Length: 189
Figure 1 (cartoon, rainbow, N blue to C red):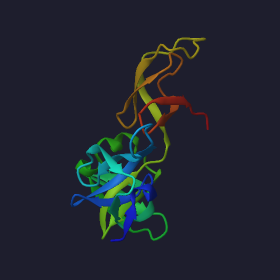
Figure 2 (cartoon, helix red, strand yellow; figure 1 turned 120 degrees about the vertical axis):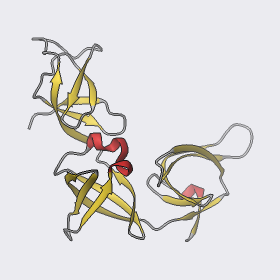
Figure 3 (cartoon, helix red, strand yellow; figure 1 turned 30 degrees about the vertical axis):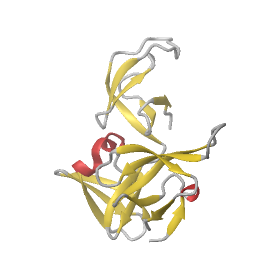
Figure 4 (cartoon, one colour; figure 1 turned 60 degrees about the vertical axis):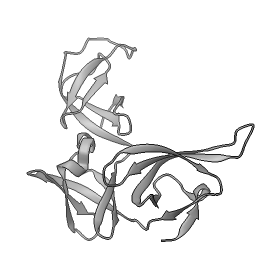
């Protein structure tokens, strides 16, 4: 594994740190008025999914892990396994419900995700920035309502509950941000 400086680590880079594989999900270079510069990194454990914050000195190095990234289409759920198909080779990969975690709320059949693997083992699933979900249950919409800071809960076809504006009705399709699970806009195709 090649060693790289922490300043070369970017979002999505996999590193071996303290004997475990982590994926950088956020970082910030900080130069305080007094003292040396440092890098504040948000690291996600590739196996457990737990996110930690760690501070590295600017001159520190970490071991970079070679990660294979591939585009896969989410196909279907078989028992407690989620089945994905590689977009070019048509190879199928099964991932357990436990490994998917809360990301299952954003998986819609036919959507493309990026699977990150190391030595054939799936480390993580990178979702698209937004997904389109169908509202299957919500209170009736208010006619001529505008988007205000008042919202109502809506259950989507994946089971995700999102706060939506009053004008959203059952059967509407909405665009949802996959990073924080918030409503972005009504989707008109």
